[in-house]
Amino acid sequence: MKKHLFAILLTTAVFCSAAFLLLTAFEVEPDTAKPLTIPFQYRGHILLKANINGKHTANLLLDSGADGLLLDEQYFNSTGIVIERSQQAQLPGAGAEPQIITVVLDRISVRLDTITFLPRYVPLMDLRSIVGEKADGVIGIEFTRPYLTEIDFEREEMTLHPDNSVLAGFDSIRLEVRNNRYYLPVAIEAADGLVIQGKFQLDLGNGGTLVLNSPIAQKYDLDLKIQKKMKYFNVSGGAGGRVEGYQFRAKSLTLGNTILAMPHIDWSTDAGGALASTQFDGLLGNVILERFRVMIDFGKGILYLKPGTNLSEPFISNISGMSVVNKSSTIKAVLVTGLYAGGNAEKAGLQVGDRIVSVDGKKVTTLDEKQMDALLRQPGNPLELIYIRDGEEKKTSLQRTETL
Image (cartoon, rainbow, N blue to C red; front, side):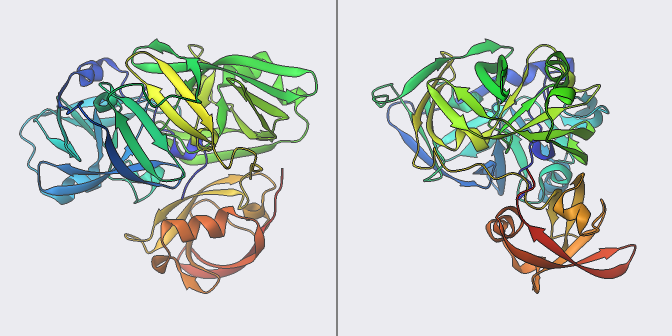
């Protein structure tokens, strides 16, 4: 449900610290002789159903900016798996305050359909505070490297092809590969006469459009040159905690041979963390990629794109004006974690920390991710919200109109 880019950002540098360098070593048992189709659930993130240690079902968020396997600490504890060997490590990422986490050194098996692999280390972190209760962990793309990986967002299927005989009609974009991360050229016409060109990380782990790192935003002087923009913050926006930035609507975004009109774009104002990096210019997320049929040859570093049926649909910005985390299973509420200045949530009087328990007369515990997403992200009639603040029940009306 939480699609805002920073709110779901885990990818950049999640496993880049020295403590995690060996995570790229996998023992994989693939069958590359025939295509393998794996269904997934898509709500801004790609969630794959996997099996841990042959006993425990897990919903794993696919992330091209990650290596190996990371599990939510609460989920891991619920499995009853006993840790025999572990160590503490620092987890960098979006936000300025890296987490100190536990890294399990025991061998834990992961099975994804017919593919079994053994990551050498498994970091544990409070993942659900960032992405909500829908995800039990994050899985990198190591297991896809023997294949040509097809991601069909419309059918919600990932197909691993043994060869490239399925590429008719696809445009190709060469990827720059650095430290198991994949970068591609993108051009953004931010305003009349203002074109930003850079190298952006291909990021299957984020549910936004595109984010500009703070150094390139400063280089192009966006704070002065972009007149219509919305400032936002999110207290649990990434592995490093709080993130801040602006959102605006660009005139166009060019990806390969395709020009997308009027996308909403974020730029970070973070002074530290992954989004303050000068090693790349930002992140390209799923709200762009979902407009294509996507093929990726991770082994050769090539992205293939074919326009989807939704290529020309208008981009919808953050209608609610807030970032939220679905915690309906634990606290019976949807937790407000971030706000857009002047957005609909702020106008409705909502604050970070508020617990939304009812939307238009329906308890949030009765709504699935798709229903909640449609209510909070799609334009429509005002919503009547009931929320809890400091133990007191309050009511408000939330407008659902575009603000950018």
